[in-house]
Image (cartoon, rainbow, N blue to C red; front, side, top):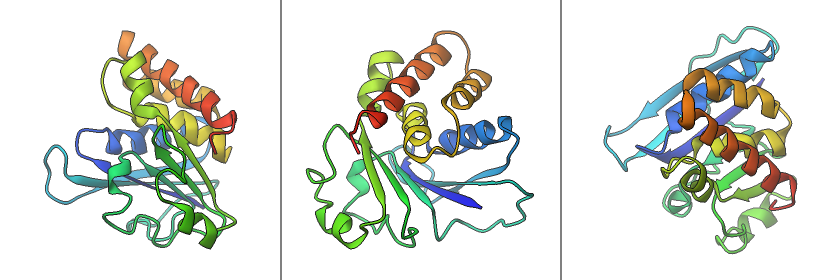
Length: 188
């Protein structure tokens, strides 16, 4: 089973990201599950969502405590809480930022987790450019597809088009493609 934990703030589409990721996996014939975890339900409050992907039925219902991948939609959370707690030794970390991991002060994390693959993608910038709103979730899923290989980009695109329509869907698809390309180009 591949488990993903998504961290962000209310209004950034954290819950929608987990849902879209789950749908993308389902479209590929996999079993998947997505659910949120809220504290205070307000814009800007920290939010977590979880997604599981497996080739067999998923019966777990508890939060993801030992993720194989982390998607961090708000880099402002990096030094406020221990987002990396429980991360698999060979896990993936995708952070919404135009800065490098070193610029984000994650040298110590990288040194203590040499088998993890970390990557930054300027998802908010891409969302603003292609969608017109600072909602980085769909773009980050393109980056996730690139660094993990767990889902295909065309499945992410289909999930986005299933959730949204018109210009919003196409803008999010374009942002996801751009993030996929950025992650493949070595921002990791």
